[in-house]
Length: 109
Image (spheres, rainbow, N blue to C red):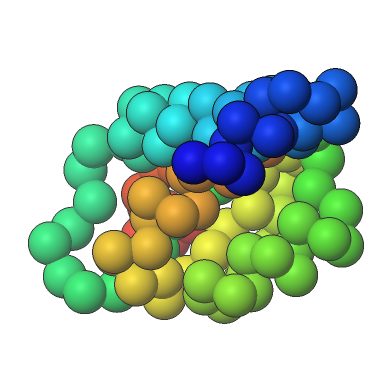
């Protein structure tokens, strides 16, 4: 309690507390909007294939991040095809702020 009182009494402490609060709000917002980014229609099996849409053309960084979750099989425009994703990881992918939409990859696509 004394540490908190000291932090609230100094400018540096207030800035750090403000930054921590802003970060927590940002994380809460990402968590809240993630389910809306995931389209319906994913099969009920453990591993799924998806098309992930970004607001820009994906770069190497984005491909490397997606490879943590599954196998990147290609890109087209602003979309990345990701295969063999653990279904439980769709939410984690949707929480990335630069992901706009996650849809099931159609067979033959």
